[in-house]
Image (cartoon, rainbow, N blue to C red):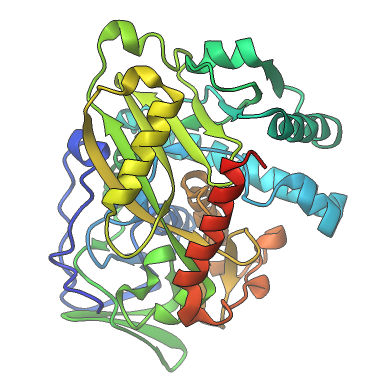
Length: 435
């Protein structure tokens, strides 16, 4: 282990402060049997457990810390039907059929969140599907966003995409700094930790054993099966699913997969509750918002608070410099927030891949994996549980570019942190000069 999993801190987040009480799950003790052992109780693992149990197979879920401790409880709660690689780029590199398949998968992912929230009655998730606005800082990025929207409408059939002028974005955001933007329907927001805890509670009530504080310290083959060993017990199963994403290096059992990912720390801040008159002026439609800058910032209003997040935090711990940079960017967009105190600051790890898409599938005849969501994982990881269940049943679902055979190891892996800093610095420079 890289640390004592029992003492790893939770995020000092708005979500932790406002979430429903967490259900206590036991620590694994002794030997258990299952059809599928699932390592990780985030969205991927719990969705996989849900779909596997519905298939009539018996899963067991092992979580190193607590359900929702990792990225599933630390993210911004934005639901989007997209990949970091655009559909237009997919079309250019892989053809129209692949672009359409990826478009279908992306939209299936947002529907999956709604399906799971409905099936388990997770009202506290506060799921909305009001759309997302991509707001442009200059005419160059606005033109690129409009060109992309026109292409999506003509080639992918996204008829509801709307182009906004400066006034339209001003009405949407309450900010004067944007020159225009594009409104994409179907996206939305969620309370990510309540969603996760609702999933854990629902899957547990379905009869699926979930064990917390039970890190898998060894994963080994045993005859025609596989054994997941924890400090106090073991699960013998026919198959294993690794659903640890950017936290794969918590134990040596899954650390080898970390070499396929570039962990990128994403920081978030949340203001105190705003006075009613100010809250009513900012983001009145309740959508989520992103910028067109390379070092993307995003923001949304939750419970009369502004949540503002973005990339650019480095290292293994929260970064005050990153929080300060976020606050400066937030005030740059919303000057009226200059004197509003921050109440929450937290961060979590985003798992980037070399080809900018997640990967799912078999890495051997006993082991399945899904990870690498590139910062758009709330919806996609929820959907991947359905595909993992299909693989576990012996099926071969069409996952397009997400096929695990395309997953590549990070070259010069020990140099990843300085490389990330260098690329991020270059992006920040280009953003600063308006390129």
